[in-house]
Length: 172
Image (cartoon, rainbow, N blue to C red):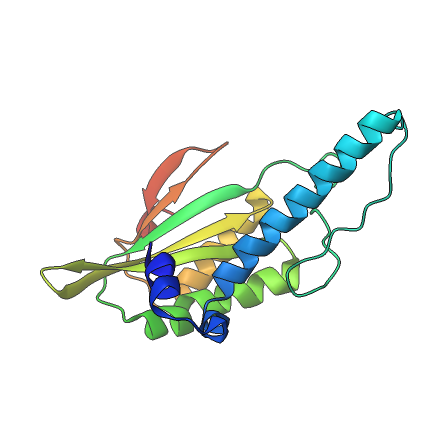
């Protein structure tokens, strides 16, 4: 809705360069439309049984590759860490997220997928970090990294499928 308002007030299309989402969205529709047109033409000409080689590109012109899950790999284990300290986002990143990213870079076993700062009446009350690990055996290293960042003992760690449990840091 904000983009429509901007479009109606600005006659200059160059202002959209500040909004890469608009270009991405438009490019996605062009790719989908191009794919549908090619599929329709192939269907009409009777070539539907042959697999055409179509090169799809990102809005920046780079070849698009669909991520393919390796055979036999299972879904990652999602972990939500709730730290009951008033941490600013940069401090949360320096103390916990960056060391976790370093751990995951070394082991190629997971990723930090999110994080946030909780506010209550305008004051920071706690922070959370969302993690995905590929193997349950990496959990002790994650706990060790949280302790090295001086996470309090009452930090809540919620582990998703297939473990499904919530524990405090002191219980590990």
